[in-house]
Structure formats: C-alpha cells, structure tokens
Length: 151
Image (cartoon, rainbow, N blue to C red; front, side, top):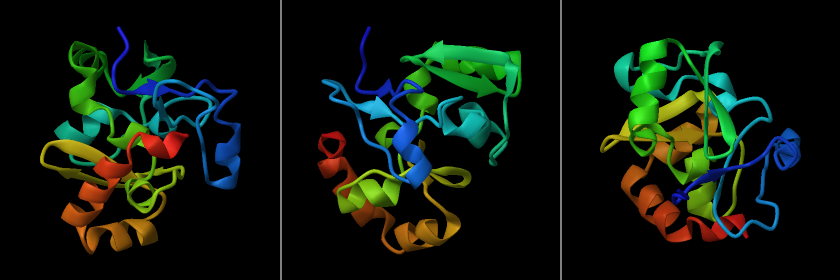
C-alpha cells in the first residue's frame, strides 16, 4: 500500500552527494536515502526509545517503501514495521529547515528533534539551530511546502 511517503532508490539518491536531493519524476513523494539506508543507517526507533541517534545494523535491516532501514535490534525492527509512519522522519527524511524554505537537502543523523511525537531531521547542527529559532513556524511552512518541494 502506498503511503504519503516513498523512498528514493539508490540511483535517485545520487544528487545527495552535493548536499541536496530531489525526486526523479516521481508521482509520489520520496524519502531521502544516502543510497545505502534511510537516515544514513541510523535506527529511527532509537530516537524515540533512547533519545539519541543509534546506528543500526545490516543484521536487523528491513525494507519499507522501497528503501532499506537499519535497526539496532530485532525489537526495534519489529516496532518500526508494526507502525512505520509513527517512527519515520517527517518530510521524507529530508532536512526540515530546507523543506520549510521550499527545497530539499540531505541530513545527518545527529541533527534531530522530536516535536509532538514526530521525528524531524536537519542538514547539520548549524541548520538545526536555525530551525530551532521558530520550530512551530518552520513546521507550518514545511507542512505547506511538503510534498510539492519534490517536484
């Protein structure tokens, strides 16, 4: 079943090497991937359970929406697969600040925040500080821009 989010294939993620990524003529929104795994291999569930980024393992990998996700444990993988929308990052895993500004950018696992039970990622700590100056405003702008920024 298609959801609001789809993930880029590794071939479509090539522009991310410049720090920016865009969807390749997709009809549905895409999620950012570094070509190996979503969130550069970080376990999305760990942000909620351990309150920090934890790099997952290929041993606990799973596929969801055409990309690979890595998890730190079998339990985290099962938790994610039971409700992926609850743990997947907002705006397709692209930088929340960039989406609020009308474009997409890659992310680093260390620049993150959970707001109202949703995971938001950013391009860098510097950009995250900029995003944090007006989180409600940036979320409202990001919501208004998403998913049109992928076109």
